[in-house]
Image (cartoon, rainbow, N blue to C red; front, side, top):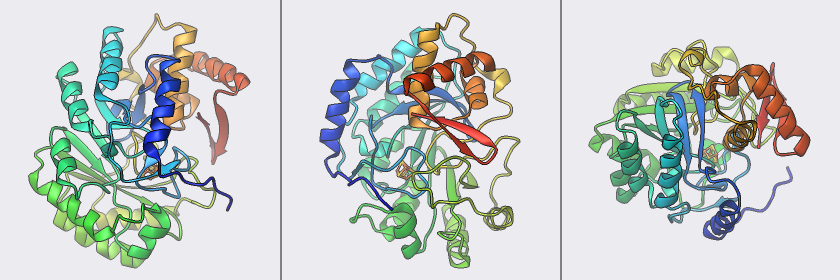
Length: 350
Ligand code: SF4
């Protein structure tokens, strides 16, 4: 498989993007809301601004990791994200169901994540603040302390079999599976909020009986608030990553006491406000005054972080489907978004 070389210079990449961003729209790091199966209408905060991650997962829907790193830095400073969030609030949009730290990579790499959690809580005192994480940095006490201010943490743990972990999550070479496992247990011990554990299954990669046995034991020990077992429902970074069959999914769900999937498509990336809600439309914020240019900018910012269908965008952004489709068609013509079929669905991505 031909791949772009990975950079370990996350800071350079981020700083280059930061300069580019300043020259464009002012809400590049606040995106959505995205309709999430676990969180409802989730307003996303991108703490990286580029594909900077500690993993390079086969299934990543953000695409191939550009900077594989464990270096923690203020990739996008708190003042910038909170400024954009304050602008979003001032614009009078309807309240989201959650404000979610995530984006194009691992949000805990951003050393300002604790400050961003505190700032989001202050701006939206009645909205839960959630954090998506691949769990890789929870062995660091500073990270555990920063995340302790969140209401909901959504860690992923796809496999506890070392060989599967290397093949599927393709981690930075310094990140051992035992330390990640223990870090998550340590975090659990000191966290007062909710933990929604996610396990994403990829056919032939982590659907082994050995993994199921280890995950069952781990779930008993961790006792998360909720477990979600999902598989790919959208295009991943690598074409070889395939969804598991329905019976495999059902076996893992039953054995792990997973939450029953709702009428929405289950989340499919292990690390993002994912999955399209069936019941989100009624609560979706309506922005009747949204101009075509603003709508196009919001769509472009949202699909750049997460591939979505036209129907999912209509639900999440509270706009009529024909208007969303027309904006998508215009963005397709300019090359700002691309379209890809996955099963019965057509996804748009940045
Ligand atoms: S799925 Fe999440 S953890 Fe994996 S490479 Fe993508 S952003 Fe990183």
